Length: 193
Image (cartoon, rainbow, N blue to C red; front, side, top):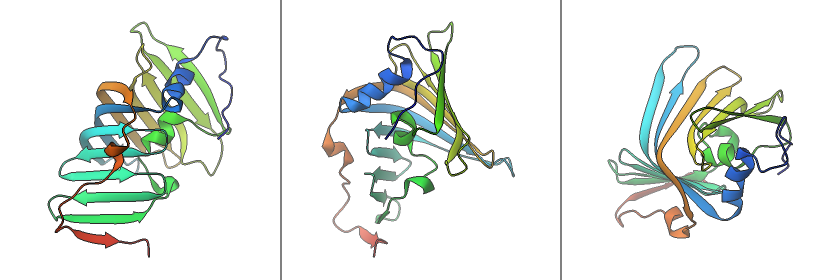
């Protein structure tokens, strides 16, 4: 993955570079989250919350009787209410959440700027004019330790996706976090075939 230079930033390490280096150093960002999708046409919103773990190449969401693990090639969802596991091929471009993609980096079509606030946070803004990009603009707010506080993403249809994080911290990577556990009697639905 190629990364672009950050405009208007001195030679010292930027907030975005610090954020990326945590993932490059094999750490996992863990936090409580609230995720809201706002449809620009209907102005309706869908909200979910829970716990999230984000690594450089995968993520895990634990929320409201569901557990989702994405490893970059496969998506696995355990629905506690139905005692069912759904396994499917993962396509990043179809994922309107994909926190690992937003937090870990962008391709060379994005321009990155940073703006520090008096509150000690930094807003990292990534924009692109690429017609094939999933998001035209992504804003990541990080605290003074480069822990994400929020992500706001805008797609071409002007839909808005807002994810806020509480109690966030980078931890050593533990692969067991990304293994899906479920009861032996769970129904397995594998859509990969």
